[in-house]
Length: 353
Image (cartoon, rainbow, N blue to C red):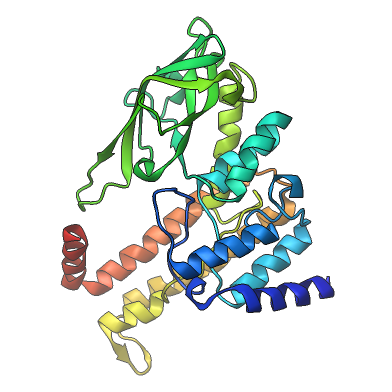
């Protein structure tokens, strides 16, 4: 593997533009978002190399890298602080799901689109009356010849205002038990029957949305995993989702940007130092514990990746996602406590923006 590492290092050094290194924006593939020049160059070069989804088969836009090669690629990207060229639900959620459950025709059609970032994807799962009890969903898809006609609404469809496609859990057989009459379908959002309504948060931002379907149409060929098998397929997709947020990127896409700042340095900036140490002893102790948890988290991530078989996330993905979220939350609370009243000012400024 020494030759592969040397070749990878040389290629990345030569082809990753300065504007695609360090903390910053990672494209989700939306047709409505114009990329910065260096980001566009970086994405195009990685697409040509097959490294937006390096473990996917070459016929679908990948590079067919094995696990060891993939690990080397990630190491070398982190070494130069290169941003992932493409991320989002296309390569992290729906792409791996199609790769596992899709027909040959579906793979040939949709996976290259995902690998090239030619369209961002929204996730149509939760509904106003079906959140925790997702199997109670009521969005219906009624067959009409070679198409399904969809009516209903989905909520918390993150980034839907920028998305081009949406994968949706719909009820295709209302007479069957609720878990057995569901299908996962792919829908083009650029049609008259689909409308997106942003949900405004207290901060003033609207990353979450409600998406309404009124006689929206999708082809029968866009059912993934078979009619009425959506509960099984949909749960599998959630395992890929949890793997992504847990930092266990076995779906074959890139992930894991470096942190934009050091938490201890930020806290030190607001509370000051005493004898070369953070002045507030209680905050100092909590920072040590948070750092220990972060290190444990990373070790657990690596263990989960090593124990995974191929692209098969499992129970550990959900566990690591939860513990990672709790650890990040603790770090944010530490920083806000250190900032004191200045934290309230920054929050207010964010809300105005």
